[in-house]
Length: 66
Image (cartoon, rainbow, N blue to C red; front, side):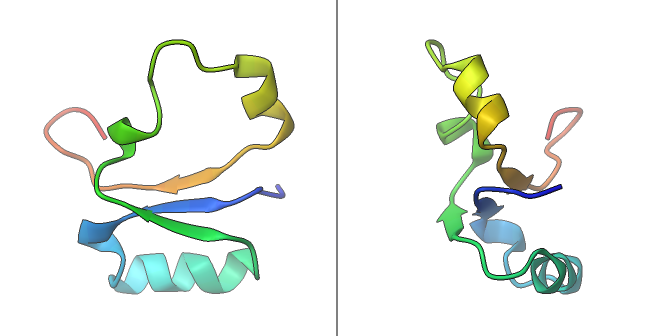
């Protein structure tokens, strides 16, 4: 799958698994974020637009939620 960008939580940015994943996705924009909830799952987001340009989100699981 081709992603438009990669969002990476700061807490896991330097882990071996994330580094390995980033090596496989190639040269696409990488955006560091504090928590994925800041950017995603907000009210009023355009679902169709998100499906046209999907992003990869690399986040740490907190409790039962990512």
